[in-house]
Image (cartoon, rainbow, N blue to C red):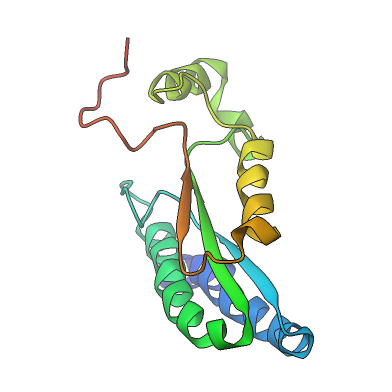
Length: 155
C-alpha cells in the first residue's frame, strides 16, 4: 500500500477517536459525567486480514488509546469503551454479491452476518446507566466469528 492510503485510514479511524474525545471532554467534565464509545473491529485487535494492515493497526490502536484514556477520564466520572463488530451486513458489502455474503454468513457460528442494529444495541448498553461501572473494556459483537480454530465453515 502507499503511505497516503495508510495515513487516510489512520486519520479516519485512530486520529478521529482522539479528536472527537478531546472535543467532547470539556462538556463532559462540566457535567461531571460522560460516556465515550469507540467503534473498533475484530480486525486488528483479534484477527488479521491480508492487505488490511492499515485498518488493523488503526483499530488496534483505538484500544490502546481507550485503555489509557479510561485511566485518565475515570476521576471525572467519564467512561470510555469500545464495540468490536465482526462481519455486519452494511451497504459497504453490497458489491460483494449474494453468494459471497451467504458464504461469509456460513463462516459465523450463528450462521449469518450481523445487523447494524445489533451493534447499535451494544453501543446503547455502554451509553446507559447500566454500564456506569464499565470502563476501558471492549465488547465483541460478531456472532461467534472469532471462536472457530479452523477455516472451515461450521455444519
